[in-house]
Image (cartoon, rainbow over all chains, first blue to last red; front, side):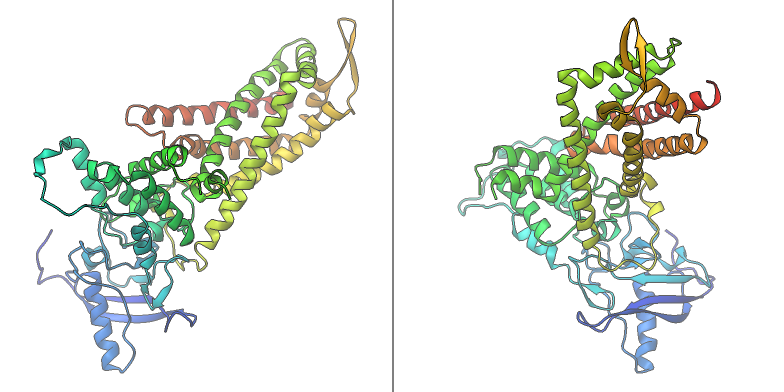
Length: 261
Length: 226
């Protein structure tokens, strides 16, 4: 990664941004010119510059989600030029730099589009559907008492690695945004796999998958067609393997759980 | 609802039905193609007509015909239910999408390809299955016995250029439907393993191309060479 380049020419861009006052009003695309964009800026910094301009002009700044700006919190979103988190693979919007765009480019910026992710305002969507899926079973129940020795439960390195890979999901929702069906299968599969792989998660594995999948349907996410778009656009590289693991967990749970309701 | 109906009316459950019926329909294609290859016998259609008589009158085949019909109905019904659900999951479309960057065309157009195949299927059944099963074919005498001459119906149909074109285009659609569907069906059942998945994917691709090519050659053969 190149450092700050004093010779980098500032860019002028045209942004087409989704503006929407609140949940209840219809939105539309609004075009904004942005000047003096340094190629070293992140995408969110570029939006900060535009928002400064808008505030000076007494216009409402564009609302967008952001928090850590280090690619680890999962707060930022944005559907940029037809791609979740923009054109670079394995990158969140906050880690996307303007050097990946050219002077004179027109950039389309939209919120995640899914019935389960209603738009709050402008580019901010409500992703609490993910929280409700997590609450349905994405946890382990631990009794209080003495702390067991970490090495007392043997977990093969390969299994621990797989569980960790699944656990890197930052819940940003890019999988849903990129999927033609707005399916949440990659997210749910990461959460289910992570716990199903480890001994601590095995006690509740059947009820967990049944409840999380049921909640996924209640929230109104679509079905999985195995296009692979979710994994291709996932900023942390959650693998499709997890979806197939979820399916095995689902089939075994449905066939053998005690739940007949 | 019982746990059973609940399971198979959930999105994941419906996909399992899509997958099982889809793979079952793949096995039907193999049987159908092998039977059809008898059209190439140079015996004036005797082998093919005897085969079609057997298919229309054998009890096992007649039972499988109902299973096959159910396979089609469940596959189509769940496809419609899931497509509606998928559309409802994104009520507002993006102004700009670049799906070619993250997925194959066939994987995104299974519904379109399936619809083309369904239209073809109706034409195909109307032209061959309905007269063969419910009457309307000429008679032919083979080894002293009277049979219905389905062979002549095949030969005559494939002298019509636009009819041949419909068949070839439908087989292209079927090939793309299967290129995604075959391997996707295994994934939907969770049958994914690093030892076997590469083979399933390769086999599925070859299966799709060979089977559809096999079907497409029949109308082309009768149009150009017969």
